[in-house]
Length: 492
Image (cartoon, rainbow, N blue to C red; front, side, top):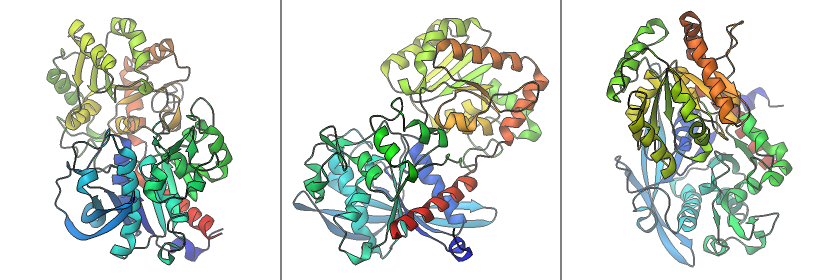
């Protein structure tokens, strides 16, 4: 049991991420890495962020220091640049330092991922992060690693840097945002990083003949978590465990689930500058104005029919095969569908073709457009997330805040955040199905339409959705408990 003094003690935390909003983003990891530190800073903790300095990052930054990092028998220069993000609460403003690890060889390229040497790029990044700490005179109580790109850090602390007094007692938390992406590489990456080959075994970093960065984090971090309670349970099963379920069951006493929060400074219809008309629970009629403007922007007739929104990566994980399965029946309904996203060509083609064949019912924008995404959240009546698996999901949390009712499959974070609307009790905030079948999704759409056609009941449901609190405040407190637990495990 923690003492009162321990509870009050402010922590020094370094959050390591390959992507951070507003600097670089491909998915929800960037949102978490940009939002959680703000909440921690407003709680009084000394939290700092470190990420690679990709070519796309144009924000002004101060050069702090440069130093050599030994990798692959040679020395690569790491240049540390510093910028910041700001956290607001009322009149209070906190600046969260953001360190950018620059190296022209590894990071002066187009895009973030999909290069031929990802193992060396993020291996170098992980080592440079640790080498940076004494250079900037910052010794964190805990390093919060995120996904495979920072997976080597917990092991390097226990191997490469084990005899260096500066690194003594630094604890590690490893967060899995999506177990599907693992970072599996050739064995020579160990030599590149100076890690002893004795760790290349089934109890260590070896994974089907390769070195797995995500397994490395899972094995050697003091404590591990994922981004919802249900996903933490699911990944201990063969269906969701991506061949790591045995290890995760072995570490279940150190495995936790914490649902992601939402940055209500960024996602809030009452202050959102990107939507057609700002609104809140007090002026819900203006939500209707957003719907009409969205219909007009996407070339749809301005009709009062249920408007279903889909903002997503267009990949199998997101349950798009279910939508494909039911398109004929779905479009027989008196509804409209708006889609924004990019991904697999088969789904890009599917939605493009649906729009061409049904111009009065389907509006599709292939690609990504952040302001349009906000307008879809604001202007839609319902939001589709029939995911095959979903570690946490942010789309359903955003749609709740915008009074757009989520239609989801009960998996991962969707199961933890969306509860079926019970007409007789006026409880719940969305519509949920469990069995992964197109017919079940179609039944869920029909249930939603039935309630939509009862305006007073629909208003109750919108109120339930918008009153749900998934701010970072609650989740940040859970992370602090986990940090303290990791520090205790490290000390034991």
